Image 1 (cartoon, one colour):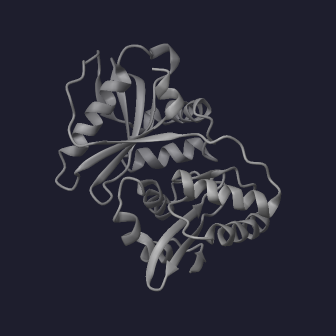
Image 2 (tube, rainbow, N blue to C red; image 1 turned 180 degrees about the vertical axis):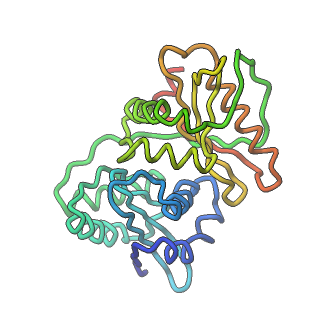
Image 3 (cartoon, helix red, strand yellow; image 1 turned 180 degrees about the horizontal axis):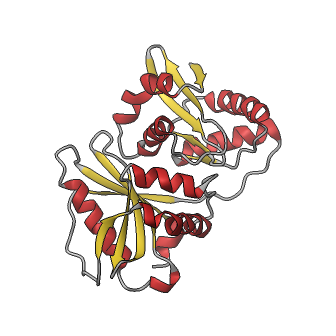
Length: 263
């Protein structure tokens, strides 16, 4: 087992893209990080750092760290969690940054968190379980007033504020510069709003197609507009639009398990 590291996104992409795209839904977020790094629209507070594990010629796991966000892992085979925790500790000291957590498949994330705790003495907290939903067909959804439209430059300040509120609601760090991050999303056509008489009342982002998958993300309705079905219809229409493309077979969406259990 070998652990490789780089801060060069193209070197990382060349090494790991086939590994990530062979399982395109569970590994969509690490694959999307590559595109954000290429675009420079990640909203990160420090340059990203990438790692990958190989056995012989085969990639068997990856990790990326994009402060202020947590370490993102796909798989951490065997005893390699200790190797990764040690490499991450060195990188954190060099960058003078705190590691805020580990995100990934439950077993892999727990293994790295335990190794990080053993190496640094840092305490670990409770897990936050997320569900991954996959969609191949959109069922009929009630249509509220309004319509979907791509977000525009005039929306950036409003949506940047909503981005901060969304991250606060899900207890996740906001981008280092929310306005710059939203400006990048809008410029790349990666954000939609539900518009009622010229006023945005809900928002959702989406990835570009990656190995036949589009991920719907950051679905948010401010409190004063909730209960009208805006976000539900926005997700349905955004998903239908994506699935109409020849290069898309599935849409996907993550939800927080605790939030879903309350609905």
